[in-house]
Structure formats: C-alpha cells, structure tokens
Image (cartoon, rainbow, N blue to C red; front, side):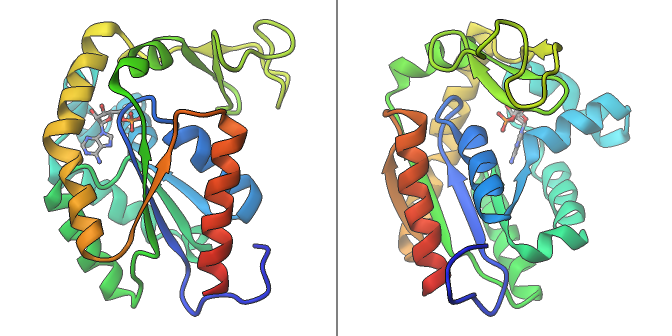
Length: 229
Ligand code: AMP
C-alpha cells in the first residue's frame, strides 16, 4: 500500500450501494491500487453455485430471482474467506453486509481478531439510472474486468483490454425483472445500514453518478486518509 503511515491492524472498508452503483468496479480499482483484497459475496456465491456446493445449491434460485440469500449462508461463506491469509493485508467488502443481521455478525467477527471497520462508503446513485447501468454491463470471463455497452467499451469489441481474453459474460440476474427485485431488496434491507454505520461514525457518502475515474479518485483519497490516520 502507498502512504507513509500504516495502521496497526489491516484496514477494513465496506462499499454500500444498490446494484449498478459501481461497487465491484471500484473495489477492483482499489484492490489494484492499494493492495487491499476485494471480497465480493456475490462472486463467492457464484463460485459456490458453479462448484455445486450445498451453499451454492441453496443460493442458486434465490440469486436468479434477485432476492437475498439467507444470512447464515452468506455469513459462513464470508467468515471462511476472511480467514484466508491474503486478507491480512486488508479488505474491501463488496456486497456485504446487506442486512442488519450481517452487519452485526461482521462486527463480532472483526472484534474477535481485534479489527474494526475503518470506513463504510455509501455509493449514492439515482434509482432511474440503475436499470440502464446494470442491464448494459458485462465482464471478461478470463480476468473479471468489467465493461459496459455505453460507459466502458473495450478498445476492440469482444476483446478484454486487460488480459486479451475473448470470453465476455453477462450475469443471469442482470435482467430487468431481477434488477427490480434487487433494487427493492436494497431499499428494504440494505439501505438501513447507512444509518447503522452513520451511528458508528464510519459512514462516508460519495456521489457515484459521475465518471468511473472521478469516483475512483474520491475513493482513493478516502483510503489514503484512512492509512494516514
Ligand atoms: P452481487 O454480485 O453483489 O450483486 O450479488 C449477486 C446476488 O448474490 C445478490 O442479488 C444476492 O442474491 C446474492 N448476495 C450477494 N451478497 C449477498 C449478501 N451479503 N446477502 C445476501 N445475498 C447476497
């Protein structure tokens, strides 16, 4: 990580925001720039579905509909991943917590290892723009780099700028129906966490309607301040 002063414990950053707010894109950029590890419960669950584990089998249909997977499954999967060695350098939680039960479980998990949340960043966007953002997006199946039909096309259509892969994928739950369900789940169950983290003095609000690089600059400043604190 850059910055002159390092924290005593590994930094823990949370990215909050509805589907399409840019959590995954920004988490990946912060990972590349600061060496923090991106922990996406959506990615972990998709891997569990692909591997056919019990958790994956239980999560599959719920994920396709756009609903939330049970707290216990997600907390277990997150706990296992957080315990892996690479997370000792600090993590960006992308898509977790999504409910108050998950937020409270995270507080307990972190306190067990003497850690705490350094910042919970709420990426603030307009609902109306979210359907266009989400339905136009796709990723490189080889390296996971994200693209968008309107906002971020690769230099050569169908070829990843980052790794040269030619296996672009769209998510099964990026349909208009599933996105509507995911937005509703966000407002009902995840948005209350903004108040939760505000009460814990961890909340930072960021306008996420601008260009990807501009938002990345703002988030980078937050991480730099966090490292210097
Ligand atoms: P994401 O990739 O973060 O958009 O997540 C994709 C889907 O995985 C969500 O729509 C949920 O079905 C499920 N999911 C991911 N993270 C969580 C979580 N923290 N709690 C419950 N369900 C989750």
